[in-house]
Length: 201
Image 1 (tube, rainbow, N blue to C red):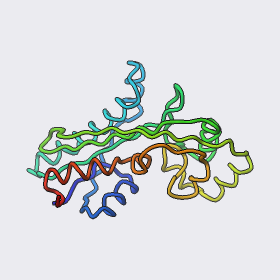
Image 2: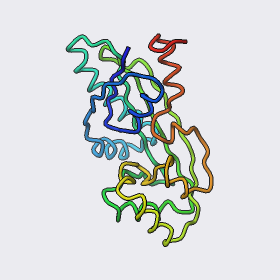
Image 3: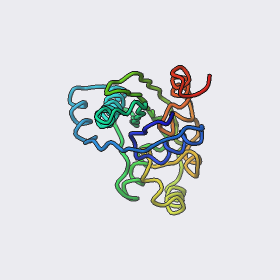
């Protein structure tokens, strides 16, 4: 049985396909900024925001699937980066990426990743995980060289880094699941899919 991935993220699609899953991508476009602002005003924790965004994406695509009788599981995920009281989004350009990495430099931050599964219009499973990453106190010269080499690829990451590439050089300590850091807690998701006979147990 194939899955529907309610995300345009190439990294999430690649993770699922590398794990042997057949995936149809159906991105769910939602106003993430408005939702974040509303939940921030309610003093919601970052994990609640990540879960709410993932659920909204799954429900949006689930509604479309339900109209056609599609019974496949819909997988949606979202991720929040938190440093102290600040939330970070994907940088708009390399200048913003540079400023963001300077803000994170020498400090620990958390990546909170939420994944949900929907079917027949309803949420049937959810999981939230977090990882703590500590950036080393790198020099501005190193930062400029990193951005010059990594280029626009850093703009696809909420942290302005890609841990599976050059971004690993930014860190002194990493605590947490690798797949959670990449934005999809894969092992719990695979267990859910085995329990529901999408994968062999």
